[in-house]
Length: 215
Ligand SMILES: O=C(O)CCC(=O)C(=O)O
Ligand SMILES: [Mn+2]
Image (tube, rainbow, N blue to C red; front, side, top):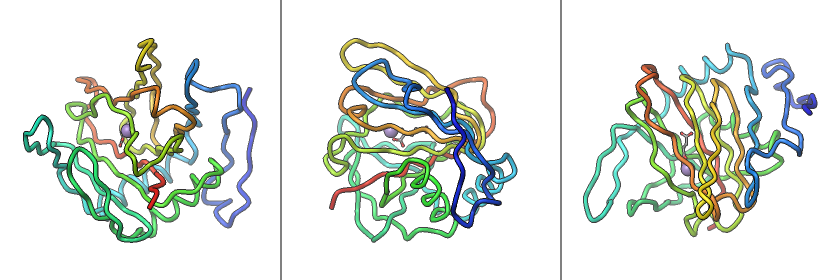
C-alpha cells in the first residue's frame, strides 16, 4: 500500500507531491529496516542536482589502507558536515567540508521524509559501471548502534544489494535518478550492502549518504 504525502515547507512547488513508503514495505525480511521511497523529485530537479553536485562538490579519489596496502580508488568521494569534524573509515581520516546550498536543501528534504536528522553526508561519484562499492556495513563506532542512513541517488540507475551476515539472504533494489533509500534499525549490525560493478552502465552516478556522527 502506498500513501501520498505532502510537503508543507516552502519547497512545495519545487519538489512536487511524492509517494512515500508505508510501514509494510520493508525490503528486509528480518533483522533490519530498509525503505525504498522511489523517486522523490521530478526528473528536472534530479538532473539539476546531478549537474550542480558534479560541478560544486570537491571530488577527490578515495584513499584507503586495505590489508596494509595504500589504495587509491577510481571512484571519487567527498565528505560534508555541520562542523569541521573528522571521520575515520578504512583507516583514513577525512575532514568535513561546510554544507553547500544544494546539500543543505537535500538534507532538509530527506530529514522531512525520514523524520530523522543528520549532521554529515558522504558523497560518492561512480563514473560508470566499472566503479562500485564492495560488501560492507556502515557500522563504525562514530555512527553508533541502530543508526539511520538516508541514501539519495542521482544519474545512472544502479543495482544496490543487501546480504544478511549469517543467513546470507539477499535483497536487491534498483536505485533510480532522484530516489531515496533509508536504512535504519539493526540493518548495519546484521546486513552488509554493496553497489555491484556492471558492464551495462556507461554513465555516471552520484550517491549521497546522510549520516549522524556521534561526537
Ligand atoms: O552508492 C551507494 O548506493 C552506496 C554507498 C554506500 O554504501 C556508502 O557510501 O557507504
Ligand atoms: Mn554503505
